[in-house]
Length: 506
Image (cartoon, rainbow, N blue to C red; front, side):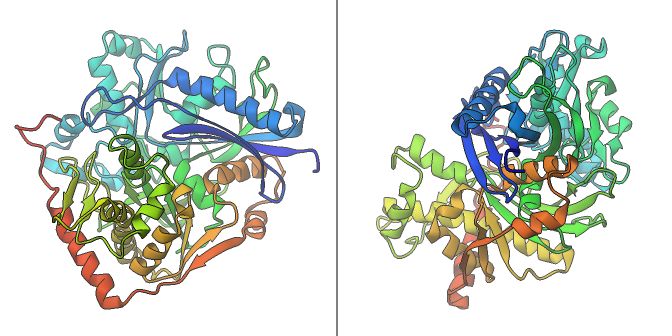
């Protein structure tokens, strides 16, 4: 296998990456490029899908060039993506009818309210595992069809396609208007609000409720199988495209969380904790989502509970870009370490409402507990602590739903390099926090799925064998102080509720 590798394309919220992996699951080379974040109005977040496709091609070229490789060296390609970010495009021209609407976007709040009607937030939850919330893809498609001139007529005429960004990337990789395959996998489909968790097929009644023609929907496939082959004129001509998982499910796979009760937390733009529940669909009574974890080939699907937190790393980015408090994200650790504690300040980053376990679209961000004593070091510390507090809330809900007490928390993503945060996280959850050697577990999971589908790896046993621990943080905090901080955090969260009303524009 010396000259064969697996390429993963990770189409994320802030950037697109291409990473080449070897048989040991180690990184050989990386290409990365950021794309623009578009904020047309408060609560609206968009991406230019053409810019993203251009970036994907560029980073694939960069990753191959850095390692002096070409398509002959790539056995298969896996794709992972920012899951609920949704695009509608014309299949005849390949042009989007509107920008991609990003997962954090809250413009569908009124649509959500209308869809829920008298039944409310849980109208579809028994079928799809999700509450009615602005987070998910289906209502975003409805918004596009309702608001873009000519879109509904074109959709009904069978000219338009929809998909999360995995679908857009795979369609273009496999030829676009010239024979591109229109597919998604079970993990991405389970984030649309349109897929029945039991049957793994589209629910025609829910699609009708949202006014979405079935012809727009991609074919639902397993997370690990050959979907098609790279377009002949591309850098990956003829290479099997064989793995597709939403980013959080991909990270769970890359973390080798294959046993019931295994959990991981990914620290990126937001934080996403997933616990494997095996072949059982576990409904949540504590504000979590029930979702598909993965499906390998013809095997039975594996399900999961998930807690989704909208804003964690994005808050650090906000301090850097909007408040100019420092020039690079890693500097926040030094700033936060310049003070002994948060000085009584708590920062609740409900910029696009609160996700798990609250699901309050009308909440907005707040800094509370401010006094003249508080300085920029305290604010920086409050920002990092917000990530750990939100994670603890999700973990508490997860243990309540599953009845499983977590023995340790596997972590990955960019923020895991922040040792102050990781120690505070261990202190708050009261169990060891463990970071693997390869922290790019999202891309790695997509690579494994593609490699398993094409025989590069045998199966889950190879993933387990490749996983290796890099660093472990043990809880050190005084339990009474830990719980006092958490109680204050809970109090701070309540101050963000019900902010959006008739006096506040969405």
